[in-house]
Every structure is written in structure tokens, then in C-alpha cells.
Image (cartoon, rainbow, N blue to C red; front, side):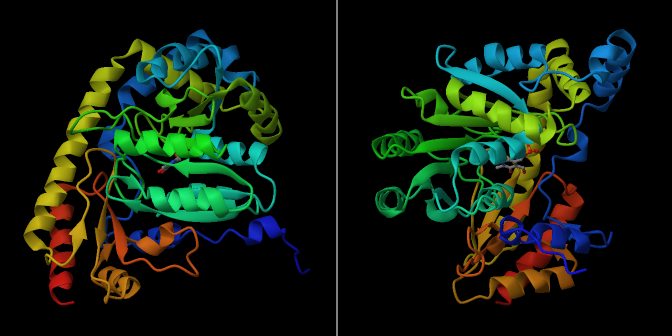
Length: 396
Ligand SMILES: Cc1ncc(COP(=O)(O)O)c(C=O)c1O
């Protein structure tokens, strides 16, 4: 049988990151390629206790079907506590829905808003999971270069003006994946005004915002939203556990109603036991203290990786100095073949993700950068791995 696949799925290629993960299965490989929280970041004992209590005291609620919008206590916590704390919920205008990770939030947003051929703008580089979700709707995906303080405004305006049927600008303004860059407040305001001027919705993806280990918080774009043009995606993946798959959207009520219908046909609702675990953890345990512990852990690891890079990397290689999140982004001189560099690194048992994996169109664009993750490796691995990469940079 020759299987005939949809045009939709043909547009999605196997993730380069997953290919690299295959290589990192070798325990001798030091991996800076992951996107995972540190194994030390999980509140294992609390989750064990919470799960046992739920199954003892509320087994039927945990095991029964529930409503698509989400487990009510968690949804209320998101609407009344978590989002208002960052100015990202307007009760007059917005609603919130619990989704199966931010990934599903991005997918459902595109599903309800984009027709085939519509344009979606994104940062260049950007989170590959979102890029694949957007491409799967056969959209015209257009990348806008990132500057050190956020997206390039001239390019953004040009694309808003000239591309056909621009529906969404997808942005990760805080501790961006893969670059670690945080957009300034001025940039956020300018992005908001431009999208408003051209009648385009903003999808603000913020899974790392609570992981700031340096500097001052910058207001979310959602908190600037006076016109109902921002859809905000949040997640418990990086602050509690990615395996439980619990995220949320804050968005204008009319759009939320459509997302509810789309989610109903997708997975009916997000796993209720997982939602109950998240709710109990954030309300009955000291969530702030947990976040502070994560920030301290990542502050230390990021500073250590930067220290080693300062020490070992050739100064012709530049890199970002993130104030939070899980990643930093190194850029090789333009005459260097970045793909060959990452292959050579794997041969020397160090894995990084080639920047090309984060390009909106890998086939036609070039990247000189690679992504490094500091949350997963131990300090010993960071020191050894960065030294190896550093020696390679001097040999370029
Ligand atoms: C920028 C960004 N958005 C969304 C996600 C998806 O996260 P989840 O679906 O686990 O909430 C990730 C995961 O790495 C990410 O980096």
C-alpha cells in the first residue's frame, strides 16, 4: 500500500532537535541540546503527596470527564491570581482556557484564526514547535529578524504592510527560545502599536517569564492591550513539570469561545488529574518559594556557562547573556560553516542545536548560530563541554 498523506503533514519536517536527541542517547555525549527543565527542578515529593491525596479524597473528579475550558479551580486561579499579577487578564473582555501545554494553545490559536495562504509573522529565529504548528495550517510563514532588544521594527512594518492577509504576529518577547533575548518595553509598545495599526493579532508566548534570575520584569505585551488584540499563552511546563502538559491561554472572549470548540474536537479537555495536581501545587504549597529555588538554580548554571564561555571561546564568537529562561545563543563568524561546526562538536561528544533548526524556512535561509541549554547539564559537564567547544572556536 502506498500511503497518501495530507498536504498539511508534508509541510512539517522531523525536528532537527529530535535527531540530535538520538545522538545524545550516548551517555558519553555532553548535551547542551535539550530544552528541558533541570531534573533538580521538580518538586517530586510534593507531587507524590498531592497525587495520593487527590486519589484518596477526590477520586471520581480526577477520573471523570470534565469541561473543555478546564478544571474550574485551576481556571479561576489562572484568571484571578496568576494572570492579574502580570496584568495579563482583563475580566471585562478576556476569558481563559486550560490547554494541553502552550504548544496546544499555539496550535488551537492558528486553527481558529488562519485559513490556508494567510500570513503569520514570527521572529527569526523562533521556537520550532510553534513554527511547525503554524506551517501545518498551510500558512505563509514570514520571519522577522531579531535584534538584541527584540524584533526589528522596520522589517515588521514592511511585512505588515506588504504580506497578504496577515493574521497573527507570533512572538516570544521574554527569554526567547532559542536566543534568550528579552524585548525592551519600548519595543513591546512599538510592536503593539504596529500590529494595532495594521489590524493584526499578537500571539504572545511566555513560558519562561517567571524564570527571571537577573534584572527587572518587563511588562507583558498583553498588559498593554487596550484593544483586545493580544492572545497570551502561558504554561506550567517550565515552572512545575512539562510532563503534566498543563498550559493556558488568556484571550478575548469571542476567540476563546472558538478555541473551546476546536479543543473539544481535539482532546475534549486537558488531563484532569494533571490539572488538579497543578492547582494543588500552586495553591497549597509555597509556589513563590519554589520559583525562587528554580531561579537560583538557573542563575547559577547560566552564570557558570557564561563564565566558561568567556574563558574558552574565541572572541570572534559572540553570544547572548540572558536574564532568565533556559537558553543562550552563540553566533560564529560569517565565514564559518555552522552545520559543520555542530557536526564536528558531536564527533567530539558535545551536542548543541544548529541555529538552522529555528529558522522559519530552513531550506532557503542561513544561520551562523547555535543554541546552548544550561539547565540540564551538570557544572562538570558544562566546564568540559564548553572547553571542547572553545578549543574548536580557536581552530576556526
Ligand atoms: C517558546 C515556547 N513556547 C511553547 C513551548 C511549549 O511548551 P509546553 O507545550 O510544554 O507548554 C515551548 C517549549 O519548549 C517553548 O520553548
